Image (cartoon, rainbow, N blue to C red):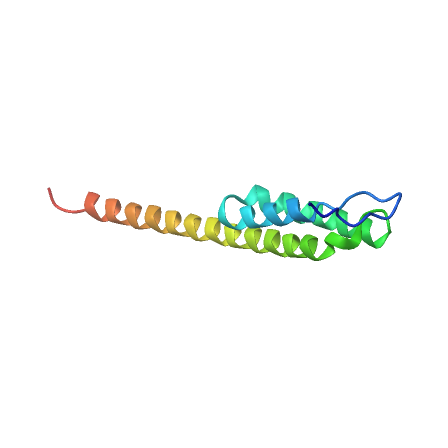
Length: 106
């Protein structure tokens, strides 16, 4: 015998908390795009929940997905910045080594 989910309030949209939470987690471990999508969807859904247009039972999962999306975007942004800095340092070091080698004796 299966249990029926609790009935939703009439006239409101179902929440998308589970999907937003999954996207937020994927934003941390997979790619930044999922984190951005989770962040934007969570903002829109939380606004709709506050206005009474969306089922509030998924508010906790929606907030958790938003936080995961934010963390994912920040971590991926730092990852990209560190890699760009390493690349620039390698290019500068390689250019300095080439310049030093070009001025030496044959």
